Structure formats: C-alpha cells, structure tokens
Image (cartoon, rainbow, N blue to C red; front, side, top):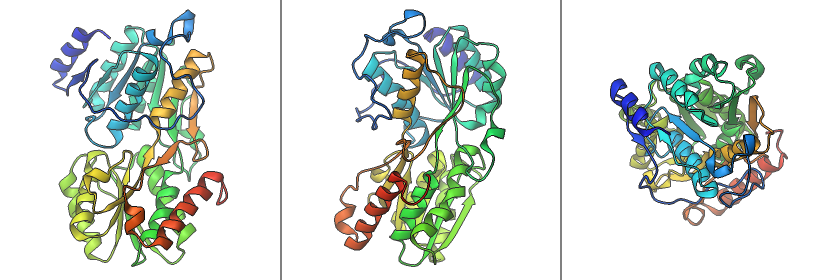
Length: 355
C-alpha cells in the first residue's frame, strides 16, 4: 500500500483514520476456518507465481474497527490473513458512500490482488469500477435477502464477488424463542440494506422454530451509528414487556445491549462477541464468520479457483458461528441451556431445514 497516497486521500476527504502495519490491537483467536486452508505464512503461490505473503489485500470500511461488530470483523479478516500468510495488514476506516469510489480506484491502480469493500451500501461504486480493473478481485461484504430472488441483486462481473453468510436471522430467532419468559422478543435492524434485511427477514421464522406462540417484533432504527437512539427504542420495547433484545446496526446496536442490561432482560450480541459490552445481559453472540470466509476467498485466488457473483456461506458451511457462553450456561435454567445447545446443533446439521 502506498501510505502517503492513502494519507493524502484521507486528509482531502476529511475521513477517518488510515490504519497500517503494526496496529496496536489485542490479539484475538481467529474464527474457525471454513476450509482446511494452509496456516503457515509463505510457501503458497498465487496469480503469476506470486507468494501468498506478497499478495496485496485491503479492507475498506464504513466505520471504526473498535465498534465490536461489523467493522471489527473486517479488521479481524485482514489481520487473520496477516497472521497466517504474512501479508501486509491494511485497512481504512470511516469511508463515506460518496468517497468509496476514489478509494477503490486508488487500490485498483496500485494493482491490489483483493479489495474487500465492507458493506452493501457501496455496491454501486464496486460494480462501476470493477469492470475498469479486471486484474483486481473485488469482494463486497454482502447480505442476501432470504425471501427474494437473490440472483436479481447482483451484476455478473467476472472479478466481483458478493460475499456473505446466510440464515443468521433464523439462528438468532431460534435462540431468542427459547430465552424468552414473556413470549415477547424484538430484533432491531439499523437500516433496510441487504446485509441487515437478510437478518431481519429470518428472525420470525427462527423464533417460531422453537416457540410457536411467541410474539415477534422486528423494526428498523434508521441509523447505524446512533447508540443513544437505539437504546431509547430498545427501552420502549422492554418497558412494553419484551424480554429478549437483539440488533444489527453497527455501533448503534450497542445501545440495545445497554438497554437490556439496564432493565435486566436478555440480549444477544451480533457480528462480534459482545459479551464484554453488557455482561449482565448478553447471553450469546451470533457472529458472521468473515475471517474464515475471507481466508477461503483469499485461497481461492491463490489456487486459481476464484468465484464471482454470489459467494454464499450457509450455517452448514460455518458462515456463522456462535460465541462462548461466558458463564451464562451456569446462570440460565438448565432446560434453556440444553435446548439452545440442541437447536444450534440441529440447525448446523440441517435437521430443522436447509439453512
């Protein structure tokens, strides 16, 4: 990466911080691999005989890597590649939709092998520029609406992939249906965009897999960043008797966790392991397994097996993973713990449907 060029861009656009090699972030264990990919740096050749460690990869993010969610998992994805293959650790935070095209163009001009564009709100810029730079592989971190013809959402461009896990909402809903004592659960999405709408659209189906009589409410906050607004909305639902809360809204979703802890109800974290945000409320976190997913995509480029279009990871593909219990398995009624464990296993084995 040309650090000076990227810094100039960031100053001109008044964007967020450019993060480079040597970023001080606490080491975390990488997510479970989707495939049996090599884990030692170097020794593997990519396009044109390039070593894995020489591959150039960057993640372009809509927010900050400390959001404990959506943007952090993108950081974890490139850090996983850095740790396992020795690539340079590169990412840029806080990119506005209006500025994304310039960042994409810059890294394409620098002949990057893999550009991760982390968010479906950047779809138009990715599609416009991918055709201009056929030698770079572009990946949009995407969501697929489970109740629509997903093929109509994507454009057939040979070096562009729409990458994401599916059926997370079903998994979240199934757990929520078991946790609730009042038979009232709520899930709040940030905005009506594919990466979030896919979750929202699966919640009711998941809840009714485990609790047919449960009242399920889903809604949109209209923000990805306003945690205070999210907390206010969540508190209103909790005051109305809802006793399980979850959300998908970047940093805004943290407000929902704060509300749950304040009121003493259950919450489920999302994207990252969010137990530490509200340990008295967050029972489990359901996480997009993007570190393993993007390792799989990285290896597909190295192996000459790149796939464009929809690149979908189901529950059975380990596209979604569930966090540790962090002691909640000793605090909850045993029948709830046993049932949750059973349902998670059944969903991953495909015993409750093709998820």
